[in-house]
Length: 291
Image (cartoon, rainbow, N blue to C red; front, side, top):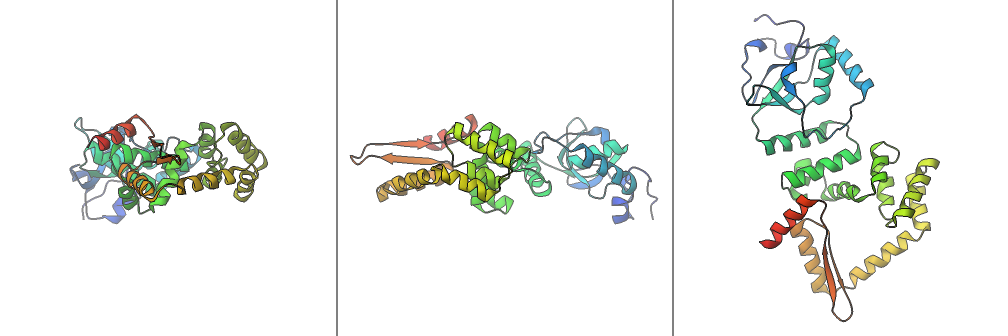
């Protein structure tokens, strides 16, 4: 049996692969090896923007005792460094623990493939808050040019779940911040989304936070302000569209992967509204329309 190096790797990967001298493994593509911690760079597509100091220190202490059990995932760059795809908490904690090397899966990936792998794996593996998930979903749709259906297949999520997360991005900034800071839940945010008047929306938000209202209490508060009745009226108006217009509206929504609204008067005049979330989303929709 080949002698193992003590220290950096600890008892993690060495105990799983005892007959392999990891130092002799060349960091090729699609393989596993140890890489220098100092040569690993952060993942630019990491959905998580903040890392809890206390949990990082706890993980670092565990790594000092047990080593890194699960390898990080990286890709090798032309300058002989390694860019993280997944495992930034383990990498940061390993730095704190004083490790010189860290076990890693080295993957071959283009920029788009790397971003897609990073976002998908981080969404699946990390405990992201709802806003971080929503932003990651939008990045996958815009940067990787995925439809909502393709994204739902990649994530193993219902399409309605994807849509509910993306709707969070239309909330006022203060509500998004409250959701990011766990002052309200995603269910609270979904209830508040029905309040279109920004002043009233923020009044209800502050009441929910100050009084620690439950989701049910929040929904009741929204209803008591006539929001639900207004939403039902909007639905009725949309249902008044001729069948041909409703069918066209649904086809456009599916084709453009965006919110589409057709309004029509009794005389046949009307408007067609197509919503977009960003400049890139606008360019994507224009490209589809020009085809």
